[in-house]
Length: 326
Length: 175
Image 1: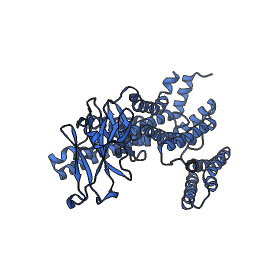
Image 2: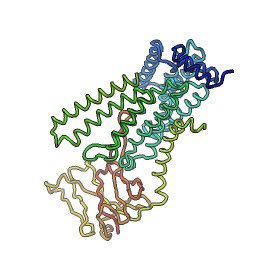
Image 3: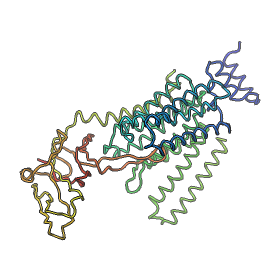
């Protein structure tokens, strides 16, 4: 019986000779540890699967248009049948189809329909019950119901798709619940609470993405890194404010965050970190140039300076991508 | 060991929960410990529905800590479109507002500083808009008023921007 170190060394040798792939090692690990690999989102989407999702989205649009155009003509029962009931049916059809490997892709399309249509169904029910559908209380309630439903689905079926929906509904719940608590308090504006919400959700997404990157949930990492870094840097840039109400701390701290993002892009081999780090660095350079140098250099010279800086940043981004990420 | 292994997962889930707790604490906790003490006087302008003035109206201001009023004659063509005002007393402890007569209000001594002697001021509320992660901003909500100070913000029951009233005008803290 070989020791663990011997096995790892053997894997290294095989990898060095290109005789084994990362996926094969992961599959072997998953089989041994009893983790059932999730076929959906565990690999890149095939063309047919993309069509399933597009089909699901079109069905959702059809239901929305049907309800919207005939809102006053349809009875409550018809509206519920067209939305909530059809959403719940789509959910169970999705579960049935997902049990067979051959129909798992179509099953996921049904889950997409369910996740899009059930919230509309809940709105219809609460609207009929006399609730104000635009209120943050109701948004918190609906997103909370969906979060619990999809978290329970994830723990029951261990599917990445349910985890993705849990994260999305959790994000919706977070925003609506926090804003419900704050209401229209002046602190919402004065403390920049919306920017901080986006900042922390972005940070949370990146941490979750990193946590999933070393497991069978790694297919969610790209999505979480992408939206996480976009929200995080966007919020940090927004906290810097604009002349004459700029926040010096965030304006000075922002380039530090950018360089951390670029450093992490190399460490994590993440194109999302590199892309958004580069885009936000360009925006920052243009912002700072016009905020502080327009009066001293003149508008046209500031434009030239910003242009050269953007070219330099673009070159750096391509260099990092080619050398460390691709 | 297990915590260290799942640190990023724990942090990723904890950060939004901690922010929710922080917001709940910062919004609700101060109201248990901090109480503003000074009531105030304000006016609301009477809505456009009454334009042009069919009869005379009053406008109010404060001079030397005392309330004064100016009568606007409906026959005065130059002032035809100046709206009248109604006087209100705000009870901060009860968080209720009531109309008050000029005669009653005139007996009160008023401090016109925007900040009360115990460090509170009347400010607009705010509102947020946007869809994560593309648009997110916030600004003043001119329909709501708050009394704010010492980390407390408490919504005031002021009926501005209704069918009958619009502009709110702060007159002074009652000393």
